[in-house]
Image 1: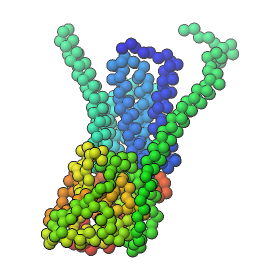
Image 2 (image 1 turned 120 degrees about the horizontal axis):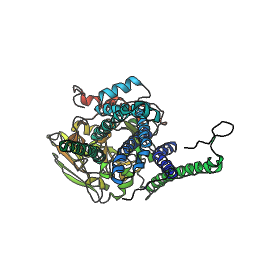
Image 3 (image 1 turned 180 degrees about the horizontal axis):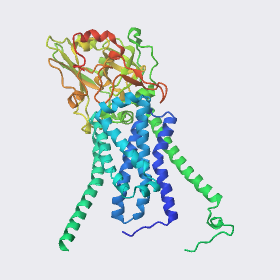
Image 4 (image 1 turned 90 degrees about the vertical axis):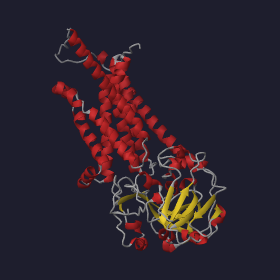
Amino acid sequence: MAAFNPTPKQLKAIKALVFILALLPFLRIAALVGMQVPVDPVEFITHGSGDWALYLLCATLAVTPLRRFTGWNWLVRLRRMLGLYTFFYAFLHFLAFLWFDHFFDLAAMWRDVLKRPFITVGFIAFVLLIPLAATSTQAMIKRLGRNWARLHKLIYAIAPLAILHYWWMKAGKHNFEQPIVWGCVVAVLLGLRVVWRWSRARQAASSSVGS
Amino acid sequence: MLIKRNPNGIDLPFSSEITPQAVYEGRRQFIARVAATAVAGSALWELANRQAFAQGTPAQRLAATRNAAFSTGETQTSFKDATHYNNFYEFGTDKSDPAENAHTLRTRQWTVQIDGEVKKPMTLDIDRLTKLAPLEERVYRLRCVEGWSMVIPWVGYSLSNLIRQVEPTGNAKYVEFISLADKSQMPGVTSRVLDWPYVEGLRMDEAMHPLALLTVGMYGQVLPNQNGAPVRIVVPWKYGFKSAKSIVRIRFLKDQPKTAWNGIAANEYGFYSNVNPNVDHPRWSQATERRIGEGGLFTPKRKTLMFNGYNEVASLYTGMDLKKFY
């Protein structure tokens, strides 16, 4: 595929476009709730934010495979924004739970987290996102050096936890269609990493044998 | 790299490199306008859709006398909310799906077959069924197992009126309600979320309780399709899923029927499923509920009442451990 390399100006425009696109779901939720369109606004916000946290998580994880398949290395320049948007929607999701489900009663929220496995795994996934968001600045990347990449491997744990959270939530209604679809997406995105790692290891082994 | 210094020692970009104010303001305006247009567009689209679904043929009115003894004075849920927020998986799993999809349901000619452990099995068409007993309006609380509630004025009569007509035998210990499951009218029946047809059931004494309502209407008109037209039951002291919709068959049985949700996940949906704030659903607490349409986002939840506030049914369960028989 012909490598497309945007000029800095084009990249800026692409970034602005992605920024707006990723913000639209939030604006849509806010506008519809503001106009009192959803019958159950709490459910609408909770489901909407949760769905979009998952979609953006998948988009973030798709950056590297897309880059490798297309040779569009500049895609990596979008990854931080996508990751931060994942955190943004996950935070909204958590906030809806804490606010509209528990009205900031932390003890009640904590009981809920401990008692119900689907909330436990969702909560863990959210907590694990916090250090990733907090270390997303250029300064933190420099400061952490090699540890930055190690820390951000947490995303490989977060994604399956998010799927498990979704799966167990939908299990209550025996409605697995969406969890299966997104479970497959995450499985492919993570599976590619496993395959790459495996082939790298094999290459390294064969080259060391040859030397 | 050649570094050019400003003669006064301060590093400033060349004026030619500064994006003119008009240009960057224009960009920002453009971005804001694109975003606003997209949001407004999607919101309007949603509104337009809802408007379209809300229209249709004018509903047939149903004359009924208010049964004040069996009616709550609480604020009624709006007709729009009660008809656009439904769990009726035969028409899709989203709560907005039934309002969108249920127009394909053909409620005439409709018959209900009544058989099993009865002396007089019969098949009644919907008109005869509707005229079997005087219609009453009853304003009931509806508590969904998901944790939300509504207040709905139903039109119907006590199910016991129908049960007496068919004369159950001594063997009849349970009543089973079977809903229509026709793929050609119900797009959701192709999904494997539930084993079709939808089956619900009650113990005989529960079914004979005067609160158990054979329902043909709501808000003074015939049932909208998405609410279980043309005939459903309403059992107000149990979670909503116990109240089967679009019923085509009523069977009287010796043994407890295998009901839809109970068959899928018995640990989550008991056969009795009485509204009970003390027995949690494994995935959420049942102690509180959100009353649909009441206040807004910041309105605190209501405390859920035992038997949904219908304490007159408590005697049906004396001596039963309701934590065990949830």
